Each structure stands twice: as C-alpha cells, then as structure tokens.
Amino acid sequence: MREQPSLFHIHDEWRIGSVYLVDSYRVNVSAVSNELLGKAQVNGYVLLHTSDPNARLIGRVDRIVKAPVHADELQDAAAALYGGGLAHNDVTISVIGTVRGAGGGRERPVFTGGVDRLPEIGAACYLLQGEHFALFVNLLADGAAMQAAPLTLGSYAQAAGAPAILDGNAFFHRHAAIVGSTGSGKSWTVARIVEQAAELRQASLILFDLHGEYGPLAAHPNIGRYRIAGPSDLTRKSPDALFLPYWLLGYEDMLALILDRSDENAPNQAMAFSRAVIAAKQAALREADMQEELASFTIDSPVPYPLDDVVKELTARNEERNVNPRTGNETNGPLHGRFNRFLPRLSAKRSDRRYGFLFPPQKQQLEPDYLDLLAETLMGRGGEHSPGVKIIDFSEVPSDILPLAVSLIARLVFQIQQWSGRQSRHPVALVCEEAHLYMPQRSSADAAEARAVHVFERIAKEGRKYGVSLLPVSQRPSEINTTIMSQMHHIVAMRLIHHADKSAVSLLLPEHLGGIDQVLPALGVGEAVVAGASCLLPGRIKVREPECKPASNSMKVWEEWQGNRNPQQLRDAVRHWRRQSRG
Ligand SMILES: Nc1ncnc2c1ncn2[C@@H]1O[C@H](COP(=O)(O)OP(=O)(O)OP(=O)(O)O)[C@@H](O)[C@H]1O
Ligand SMILES: [Mg+2]
Image 1 (cartoon, rainbow, N blue to C red):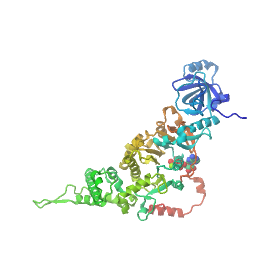
Image 2: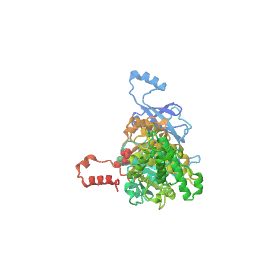
Image 3: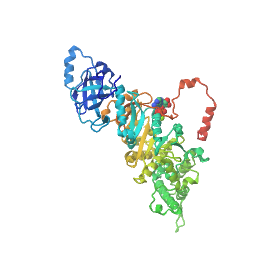
Image 4: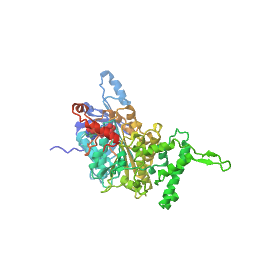
C-alpha cells in the first residue's frame, strides 16, 4: 500500500542537499542532487529539518546557482563556498515559517508565519513539490483565518491540487490592487472575487464598471446592476438609471465642473457662486422647515437647492447697474460683466444631455429624501430589494467628467461611513476598474481628476478606520497616484511587460519577495502573482474562471474576418451614437 504523504516523512528522493550557511533569515544549501537542482525553481518552496523532530521550516528559493566545476577551478570554488559568496550548486533560501506537528495541544499540524529557530548546519533540505506542496497549502487553508473567511482565487501554479486561498478579512481590511496589462485577466479575476463576495449574506461591495462589461454577473440574485443615467434616460424612466444630482457635489467639485481657472474673473466668480449657493441652500432649508440643518449646514452639506435661483442671482450681479442718487448717473455694479463667460458655460453644461445625470429633470431627485434612497441603493446590505453587490455602469458618462462621477459615489460612501456610528458601520468595498483614469498622479491631473485624486487619496489613507476598502484595478500601475498605490497592502499582479509598471509593482512587494517581479512578463492569461498579508503563501497562481464571465472576450480577429458581417450592425452603432444610448 502506498504511504500517505506527510511533511514529516518526505522520501529522500526529494532531498536536494544540506544547509551549509545560515544568515539572519537566509539559508544556503549545497545541492547534492543535480537532478533535483534542475527541478528547483526560484520562488519555489523547500522544507528544512530542524533539531526539533516535530518542527519543519518552510523556505522560499531566492537564487539557484549551478555551475560546472573544472578541476583547476576547484580551489576557487571552495574559497567562494567558504567565503559565503557565489558557490557551485548552491540554493539560497528565505525561511518564511514553521510547520509544527500534532501534539502539544494540537490535533493536526499547523503552520505559523514566524521563525523562532533556524536550521542547523547540515540540516536536510527537501524540495516541496507536487503532493507535498499541495499538502502544505491545504495545511494553510486549514488555518483559522482561512477557514473563517476563505476567498478562493484558484490554485498555485506548482500543483493544481493546491488551492490559492486568501484571507478575505485581511484582503478587504486593507486596500488591494489588481494590475496587469490588457487581456491578462484582471476583469475575470475581479468577477471571481465579486461572485464570492455575493455569496455572503451581508456583502456590501460597489464595482465601478467603466465599459459595461460586468452585466452578466447581474444574473446572481445578490448582484444588482445600475447605470449612470445617459441622455436617453432624461425622457424615459428606467429603474436601473442612477442620477447623481448636482447638489450632491461639494463646492470644490462644482467649481471643477463649471469654473475656468484661466478666466481672470475666476476668483470673483467662485466667491459669488459660493455666496449664491449658501443663500439658495438656506432658503431651501427654511422652506422645508429643517431647523436643525439650517443652524449647522455648510456649503458642502448635501442639501438640495434650486440651481435656477443661483443662476438668477449671478445674472443679476452680472447685469447690475447702480444709479448715483446725487448725480443720477448710472454706473456698473461691482460684478458687472464678470460672469459673461461663466453663465454661458454653466448653461451649456446644464443643457448638454450627456451631463443629464447631474441635472435630472425629475423633481424627486431634487428632494432631500433622494440622498436616503441613493444611500440605500449604494450601501444596502443584501436582501430582496437591495442587492449586496452593486455594479455601476459608467459607460455612458463623458470622459471629461468621469473622474467627478466616480469620485462622487466614492465620497458619498466614505462620508456616510464617517457619519455612521461606530457600532452601526458596515464594511464596504469599492472595486475601481480602470483606476488610472481617475486616480492619476497629481502632477498630470486636470481639475476634475484632481478632485477625484483628493477623494481617493483620503479613502486610501483613512478608509480602513471607517471600513471602506479600495481595490484599484489597472493596466497601468505606474500611472496610478503614488500615494494611493503606496497604501496597497495586497497585490494581485498579472502579466506586466512595461518596465515602469513592473517597477511600480515591485515597490509594493515585500522585500524578501525580491525577484518575484521577474516572473511578471512570463505569466500566462489568468495567471497572477499574489502577495500581501491576506495570503500566507505569496506566489504564482492560476485564477479559476468565474461562473459568470464578464463580457470582455478578446476578439478572434482572423476568424471574424473570415465570417460574414450583418450591415445592420453598423447602422445600429450609428443610431446608438446619435441617441447616446446602446439600449
Ligand atoms: N482565469 C482565466 N482563465 C481562463 N481564461 C481567462 C482567465 N482570465 C482571462 N481569461 C481570458 O482572457 C480574456 C481577457 O480577460 P480580461 O477581460 O479579464 O482581461 P483584462 O486584464 O481585464 O483586460 P483589460 O485591461 O483590457 O480590461 C478573457 O475574455 C478570457 O478569454
Ligand atoms: Mg478588464
């Protein structure tokens, strides 16, 4: 009968050699088995004996050196070996943790990330591959954290039977980035994560879908899909259209939308605009008899106000003429003509149907209650009427205000969390597809992008305290704002070729994972390197296909070119463009 595999009785056929050098956490093994040395891989795993027969150390391979030794080089080789430098047939290993066998109060073997005892000189070292690797990974999966909150991405590349499980608590506790070049499999990985979140009864996750590719996921009962309203929603009612009325914008956001900073009158315009908005909010609160709010509101408070009143006031200032009571002469008012360009710009934005989601036609969206409704839609925790996972389709939002629209939702979520009592706060995650579009470096940001960066930097820095986690997804990690990227504690890195992007990712990888980024250009579609506190075993994984696949299929160009094309498709595209709606 075949013996059950065990980490405590690995057959000598897997023994690569013995320890000859021990550093603070690094160990060097001189390899005796040439054949096994050939099988060892950088970032692969090994098992080391210690003087305690009930404890084994697990190490990651950092470097492998195999050089032919000629007779006349032997002396140099020996010198290098004993000097601790480059040796022949040498494996450098970082020790990452300890496996302790059953006994001492443990029913089963357990793995802990700490190392309190390094191996002795001469200790045996085994390659951890195949069934032994799977055994080790399953041991990790048995750990308390992984059992309580398992998030299964797929399996480790080394062994199909070794599930790659992340600790869902840790993954969403601190921000995580998913990066990789186009077509590497990010969206499918996102779908894999999102559909598992949807299985949780009280999930609260918002996915910013910039290309409308996540529609198929809405087949899940706990996943809802909304669209930021497009021009066609201004004349018909559709339950999935989401309006973000202008009164939800903060003062600075509103200015980013309508103020032209290069206009010499910009400071006057900003000041007069703020006064007019405060007056309009005051009047609205008085009319609604909201006394408490009236006593404490600020220019940024989410209070609906009629924009017409603001325009009326600014028009009056723009046309103001004063009559000198003594001489009877008419002179221009102090702000006369200062809004000559401001007012038409505001009016152009209001009448541009692509901005319709900001300037909704219905009265309902201009009532204070609308914010309650929106909060329930965005942050509901599952159940029949409000799915826990919400996909928000931004595909009809004009690119110039995309950053404003995305960050408005992020800010609403963050502020609602901030104003929730500590006890009633429920964790929420924001999955940010194509994050480089609205989280750019500050130096290259325009006014709308700068507002978005402000919001996302804040969430990246303070979100954890309020239970808001950020998951930027991007093809260009080097273009994402560095402050935001530096807050990423978990990384799922898929194939990346560009040097700057690889460097941006390497900065996030723990120091002892040096070299793992070298693997990035060689990853296949759906393969990733995962690292961070959520995964006890960083390494290369194959992400399992999601049940509901995003509609992001790569086109089979050659085959498509061989087929027939329906001419109606082009006519439809032109019609959709004119109507500004694909529906
Ligand atoms: N885990 C996977 N297993 C098998 N095939 C996959 C996997 N992930 C992705 N693919 C294939 O690769 C294609 C592209 O994947 P995906 O849309 O996730 O790429 P992406 O990284 O999001 O690209 P982009 O940056 O352009 O959005 C998919 O349509 C699918 O055919
Ligand atoms: Mg994608």
